[in-house]
Image (cartoon, rainbow, N blue to C red; front, side, top):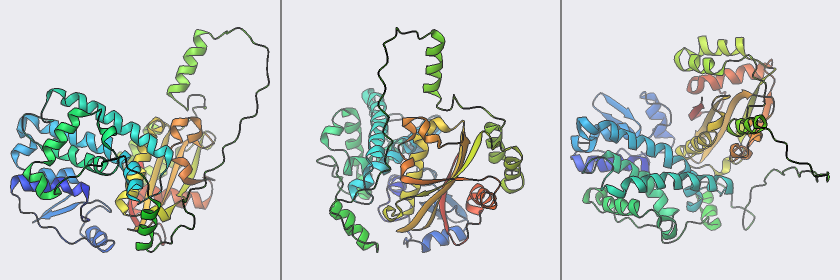
Length: 419
């Protein structure tokens, strides 16, 4: 794993508790990733672990392997331990990327993404604080991997983004967190943990320094800002004579339906999205899923789109780029029933790009159907594809096949499927 990688720290802490002799191989950006793929590991999955014939990827699985029975929760609590580790990864890691990386100067801040990240983190901490009100640890009366995993996920937030005022509402979480990081086993790996003494802020100087170190150019402007697409101004409404409210129960019901599902007003069409996703998940993609897609695609009611990330110069480590995609997917939860997407990170650390292929119900940009879908999409260029074109055929095959796709001279690093 990369040095000081927060996903690997839980593995090291678990080994510190159990006494497992863990040897850390030197991580060389680009070279190590290629070596791991040749050994049979999925592209971009870090940390990676080998012990004899055993090969494991993903932090929680490796931590469980090196842990002792106490940390695993025993036979009666192992499911509860896994529950918290998985919940934490889904709840805190994606928003942490959007919030913490600008504070470190790794990426430029995106106000919309940061506000969404703060809201998601706050919701997770509120639940955690309530849960810990009557408990010392998350599962049982002793430290388990549940505590280790959640604490490691929160560490970057507490160290670089959340100041004392932002942590104050979560007294139970703070008490629990401080108890953990002051344990000898935690200290052996993390050292003395110093929490942020003020809310994290973006530093242009730090950003420029990191860009120069990675071979990028320093921003010419004192405070570089991304050019945001101009929003159309609504035409002034004509004054009309006031009418008495005549909303019926049916009107209210229809409005609630639209609020719940942004796609409610669009024609349904003939394409069965659920069935396609079942085929894609359970059948061979090249010989079954792709033919199924073209045989059943409804171009009158569905559309194909290609996207590219607009700011590749901001991308640093590959796992951070992957986390950007993960955060975007979480914020598009309401599109799941009506959309499918394949997003891919190409290249290597400090030299990568992101692009993807999507299709969804409707002919326009789906994100414009609801404000809560618009947090991320303006960071990408979007181009509608002609489903009859050779380009569309090639892109569908490549992006649907994902890590087995033919992307020409682009080097597949890692990716995620929205389904």
